[in-house]
Image (cartoon, rainbow, N blue to C red; front, side):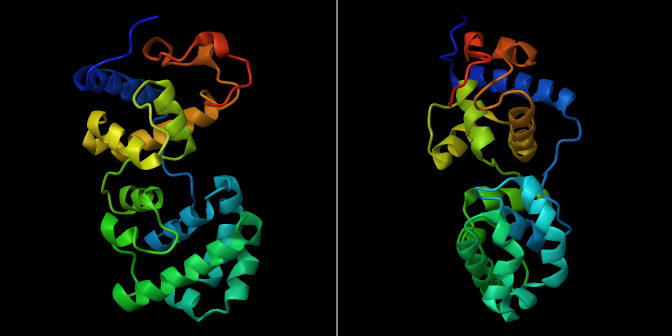
Length: 225
């Protein structure tokens, strides 16, 4: 097993090779949450916390049709919003945050989703992950999105030892090429779902096997890391 206690420079080189290999495998990688504008994506990402993207995509068409603008969320009875999102888990808080966001967007941003990380993370229920999803996908402003897949894969790849998402994000910002931050994050999601799964990683099928210090002997065994 090679020594993966590498310098930042060496990890940058390995990260580039990881990117190139995943780019070849997932040429169409993109945000998996259905949306047609920044408001829809922000709402969808809020709903995706502790919920699958597939479930969010199932309920979002009716939600977005009923609430096409920040004003419509602000004007609606909170209980009505809850009815549309109740299958997404933690829907009471999510509905409250969505409506609270709408009120702030109307008051401070002309009803539009702001285009800066600082302004986005000040919105209720919007953390750095949600902010970076919206910025990268809708405004072409690169951001590292640390979800469960990204955290798991980058720890296995030896790019970080941290579990705190913000610390992981800053570790990856040092070694991932800036212009590829958002796309790299999509690759982590796709590869995490298809190959490098949480409990049963398919190491023998993994295109990153020669670049990864994660033990092949764990393949097929139920694990969490």
